[in-house]
Length: 225
Image 1 (cartoon, one colour):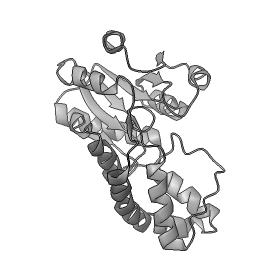
Image 2 (image 1 turned 90 degrees about the vertical axis):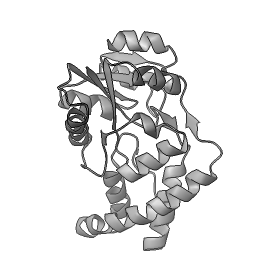
Image 3 (image 1 turned 60 degrees about the vertical axis):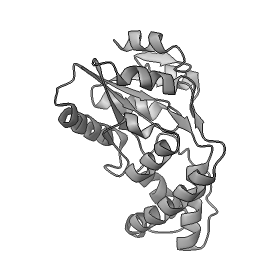
């Protein structure tokens, strides 16, 4: 059996800013401002790293930022749930639903998540578009600050869930961070240019497989096999 660890934002779905809107509202509630300066790219970073960097930008010390993150996430989830329910522009990316349906019934593949989202946030996003059911386990931004570490958590949980040692692990993601982290845990990488990084920047990292999207379901499955 092969394991596929899927990223969420930019790989499976696009929420078009709903998550960041929730984070900004939580920040405004806690520290009195939601004016986040876009001095770094959030793509591929874990929620914990993003939250800490924003708090540091707002003048908090590293110690203060680390201490504030749990309460920030608690408030963020309240807003995220509300904004997802109100959103009319959540997007399941092309081919995703068909690919997951195909893989779910194939005994050669196990499915799991490998995402920088904290687990509750990840589940809320996927539940809203009826994709949550495909992923029994995963590694999340609430498990580790670094993407390679959370991916390894996902692999370990999947081994216990599927009760097997996988013949191959694939990381499926849309940013150079996904590719590098996959390499760090010894996984193969399928990069998809459907999200936040250009095809050129993904190609520069030399993933095992690089696709524009996941529309050709049988072609993707054949390549993964």
